[in-house]
Image (cartoon, rainbow, N blue to C red; front, side, top):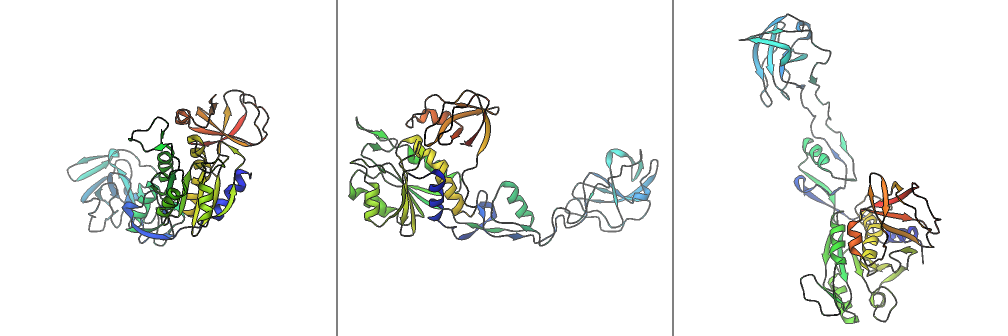
Amino acid sequence: MISVDAALQKLFSLVTVLPSESVPLAQAAGRVLASDQTAKRNQPPFAASAMDGYAVQSRDARAGATLQVIGESAAGRRFDGTLASGQAVRIFTGAPVPDGADHVVIQEDVTRDDNMITFRQEVGLSTNIRPAGIDFTIGQRASAPRLLRPADIALLAAMNIPSVPVVRRPDIALISTGDELVMPGQNPGPDQIIASNTFGLKALLESHGASVRILPIARDNEASLKTVFDLASSADVIVTIGGASVGDHDLVGKVAQDIGMQREFYKVAMRPGKPLMAGKLGHQAMIGLPGNPVSAMVCGHVFLLPVIRAMLGLGQCPAPRLRARLAADLPANGPREHYMRAHINDQQLQVFDDQDSSLLSVLAQANALLVCPPDQPALPAGTIVDYLAI
């Protein structure tokens, strides 16, 4: 067995950053920007009013002064002229500040009578004007790689960038294995169960930027496994679920090696998830997950998500860990790193009593995986511990 860290490093060695493709900006949210983008204009492109009010010369802005309103400046329609002393221009938020003006007085600070305004009080120090280019200027960069959030999309749009290069989504093929499995909606026989792992993993991986295909269930014979492997031949990563142990019906490792897989490792010192296998199959990475539902999902968080991030150009990093206090005493851990289902609330981490790796109902209640290092001693309530958010 190898450690979790060693297994993750070997997995990183099996993949590379994927090439980029261009997509319309409206379709780029949640994608990873592949190269730096530069602004094609200043924002704002002119000095703009930050308030509704009147554009004036600051030397005229004193209590009791009366000015003549000579026009209006609105967003998208500027005042075409030059403001002189003793004059004012009605102005609205976002509108260009007229030439000659250096202050916008808010409308609440003046009284208007026909085309004349009178200052009620002394104006404050703020000019209420946003200088041209205060947000960004031509040539300013939006750096890559970055996961494009809604705020990033808005920034790129304001920079007048209609399409962007993004890293291609990793193509992941999911293969469930076993005679005992049927798909949801089918009628299982008396000794069969519903295939759930592929659906949970598909949702997990797609939510983090992958494109995922669920392939037909591979039955417990070599011909069926080879057929399904053929269907996955175009994927970047093949993920098998189940059949990676050493029982008489666990054929994934044998068949994979028969068709050319060069195995990197088998078995990781963790629980749940010990019977994890990985290797290279031609141009493809292959990862064999254990069949227990919780084991497969935990391995998805610990291994598959970091691999996807690496393929998207976001670096070769383990899943980020957070810290919280134990809500109750925790017994000593054994020789394998343990990922315990838990629920965090108000920075208190409550570990579920039943950690059986087959219990999806417990996993569905959990929002955290407490990370217990190998041979960790018993810990009292209140101890600060590491966890993964799930």
